[in-house]
Length: 258
Image 1: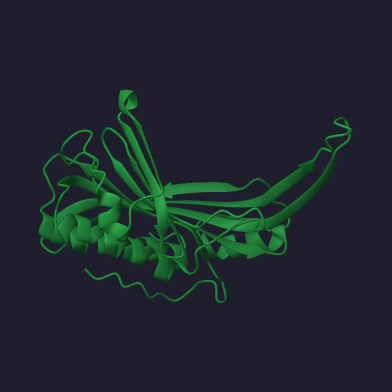
Image 2: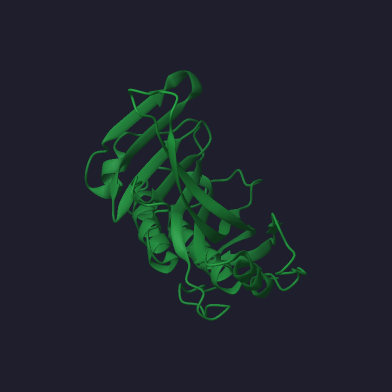
């Protein structure tokens, strides 16, 4: 089963920008983490590491590609997140087209699981958070009406819209059969950044400056069967994660798929 990264955008002209790409793995061994993982993926050490031993949480952050990589290891899972660098001058930072951002992260994580399998996993997931910048609320809902054909949307009268659905599918990838959860969450929001300045000489006086931008947002999560307890053979990890990446991009570009 081949899910390529190229897909016809629907509706035409809809330009998604990636806010985050994520790969999550569920190791067979509880609380498995190695501080060498970050450098193995990026080629350089992280700029910040935090360990909370009482909660079995480890975090590492540092430069990666056009943004930064965040590794968050919990007791039963490890998140690898590719996110844009934050800047006070940018209201909503993005990484670029999801069709290039997500595969860039996937390929690096796959090398950790396959080329030198230091983590044996029982479950994997690929996630994408992406936005489209719009001029008006009506424009956002018009796009949603095309992306969600099974939902009746009144572009003029709708407010505070949030739609989430899981469409499981049975697939076979590289000889491994599994149930795949295809979750998508669609919303329209206004992003606001408020800057407050309080002069030191007169603390009670303040000036405020707000920036805002309206967006259509999609959060896609494609993950394998939560009930699986057997290890996924390393030879299957590459095809499985790459397939999940393709499925996530397909949903993002084509909308809610049966």
